[in-house]
Length: 613
Image (cartoon, rainbow, N blue to C red; front, side):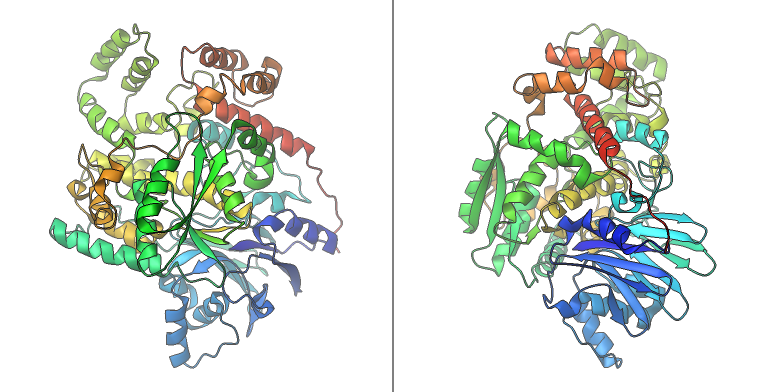
């Protein structure tokens, strides 16, 4: 896990060093760059496998030079095959295996990799780049391409140093809907994201840049699982066991993020099968209804792990927002980034690699909204005028939840409703509230052959899991040089889950049914006889109490007027409604708060000027 960088712009050394220093927290063990002809390649290394400096990057292998962020979990298997084909190796790293695999398999090498990765390989013979981003988008890859000008990095702030870039107001509007900027856009017009499951090529002589999709979910659903539930459970358990096992290899200390929920508990149980005294970590909140530390402690005791509880308070949590612009670069409004940052900060004292339960809710239909929308979907069989009539009646209720339902019923399509509900449904404070909904993958909703549940699951994997969860975990863990690995996001597990019948995953009283039934073989079901709780912090209450003055100061009318696309007067009314206890507006307030801090951070960061050498 590291930070990668490359450019065809002939920057002077001091600018390149500034670009690498900007994200040195991603790789504090080694930082360096090389000029390879007219190309610059740089790398910040977090040493995980083969800690020797022989595996530092940029890494040369024959006529190839590699910069690589991530892990190839099955690299030993690939290496064994390559040795039988005549390849020799001088390191124990997966970086060298990646390079050799490209020599042997060409662009199809990505089909052999099971891992999380973003990499670029420069071929000094034909002066061409080849690179890729992993199937599910765990690792980031940002780039600028304009003719012969090509520059890429793990974080966009690196690219922006030494350049004049312009805010993309359309992308910002999308941020206010989704809580992040969906790929392939970024917050800047000039900077793009390489999409998950894509490769790219760039010829440094001609300037030709091309992307190619190499992996996707089976959007046609042609490989439906036809085995029994018992057979599926056995197959999935074997897959999950292997997915955990291959992620337990590291030359540094390793642990597990254990929140106490189904997903992280299952990962912990499988990790503890063949490993004694596994270190586990969780966050504790003092706010009633938000603290799951007691549940994680019980599970840790049952599994005999070395458990650590980290306490989060409002001041320490909110102090981190001041550094959001450093770690996240783009505006990002998932409030669970705060506890994830704190978890990573304290975990680093004990381990450098941590397994997590990310990905279970999306693939196995675990979110509460799946249950809610599955019920609401029946109402969308009624004509829109009738639904609007029902909405008119609900609006009379003083209960803000009833009023949210009323807003939902007034949407013409279930897909629009789902997009809006992910961010809180109410967007009257935006000047163009519908402008941010037109994002990739909305066509998933038009499928006639799949259930509403499967559409939500597929859509979430392609959007929310990629753009939100992966971004949150990558930036938060790398902020403190921790590598986070997610066995439930192994592409084999995701593909298997997608092809299962809905009933194997979702029952009204048992969401994530098959995962739970596997888990209960290791941990008693009684430990989970409680409502599902997300990895959230009590911002709803903090904003009305400890942080009230802070919010009102940061989101004054004058500050709100500086935010593009926002109706400042309506936004202030919304904030006051939350403070008065009339509505729970914390998701919207958090988006605004994060954006104002991010905007200030952009203005305060000086742009290095340079002359090409």
